[in-house]
Image (cartoon, rainbow, N blue to C red; front, top):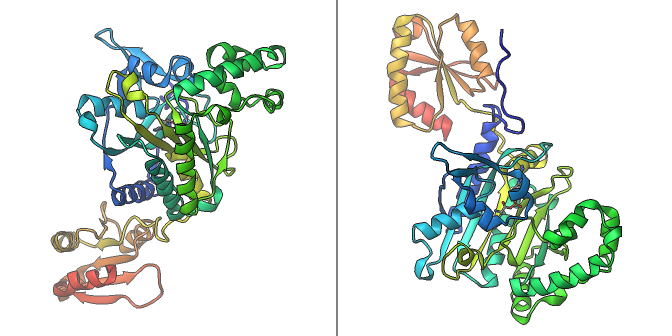
Length: 427
Ligand code: HAM
């Protein structure tokens, strides 16, 4: 017999017992973003490979070694999206959402794909909620993005478990000047660098700043700082972000070594980091990318955004967050019947209830069985109430209603009063 097929390593099923937390998270995020005036956009999960190469950067880990790229039947090179910003910028350009300097505040949610080494909090298919804002160049919107995540952390009950790290990468000209100074500094100490940093020195020297190697980090203590290379405009912009965060009461830490792993950033960059998840502690990250639209063939357009890792936030939510007390409950009423006549009557009654109370979650027993076995199923279903219809009830034109979670007598309810009774219990 052949072995049963398994899912691809790092790509997870989200099982029925997990989906209530996912749905709660997704609903909380959607409600919050609605309240801040963001509109949802949905992009394809596959794009031309060139899109990611051009936007994320040829010499980044993502493009060099993490993309799921294949040739389709037309001979085109396609890639499963490793992130959402590139697709969102492409969609905004292609559909004229950002012509004539229109402001757009967009958000998306969905799976992303990176061929990384799977571990807790790091997967090959993972989900992001992302926000992208176009044509707002000021620091006020950078601050708004951070303020709304701060509100989300509060709603999820994880606010005191995440820390905000902030940096400014300046403009590309400022970065180029800094890059020269950094390379000169590191070249003089080339032999002392770890192998990975030696390799990065020629290709992407700024990434050496967030090297995990302790010896390299000790060398970097003396290295030139990017903040010393920022011009007046970048400095004022960054001060503007910091002042607004302070006004909103949001604590932050300046991390001069925060450079991000994607090449499109300029000015503000930030990460929300937790110590609750081991080494994969960044739950949300982003920044400004004012040059990206132009780099992709459009007009100069300000852009800023972030993305959060849904799996990482769900892990936090499940272990230390605040979930609604009844999150486990997926059924309100379980209907038990005995005999075909009762089953048919129940069908009719329940469909009327569904008309009147569309939000009530009603599970009708399927597969027959004694009342005893049906009560067992009712209990397991997480329902609050069992609705009972047997021969006696049929005769008396009533149903029995039993609270499955509290002691007490079963109530008898006339068919004519069923909708009102269930409505009052449910409110
Ligand atoms: P990123 O830092 O590559 O940025 O990813 C954002 C977040 O996605 C990370 O902080 C993390 O929470 C989550 N994440 C990334 N890779 C994985 C993985 N393999 N498994 C689980 N979670 C993961 C971006 O993707 C940018 N597009 C963010 C952005 C939007 N910047 C501006 N706009």
